[in-house]
Image (cartoon, rainbow, N blue to C red; front, side, top):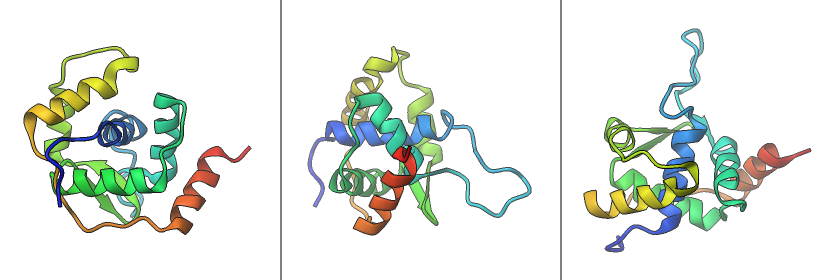
Length: 137
């Protein structure tokens, strides 16, 4: 079931995928078989930087399901990246300061498309490992 409006956490995770992935630049070297994109630990680290809190497992899972279903992000072998549609949405947004980027994207998401639904899950173990990787001293 898709809610009629996007949640702020959806925009928060979307922006975290963008910024964690180098603002849309691909992180894969041409000599690797690793999928393009950003690992969950980087998404979480970026989210924490943006909001001074770590998104919960349920927040991440729900946001990614909605973003996947709307065709804005993809997940391959644990790596998150923008789709061409997501990249266009990001690149055509009005420029704003970092502190207002999540709110700007929330408004754009609500004006441009409905949240989708997709089957994707994040296990407690994978979430915990990503948190430890992102925030271990």
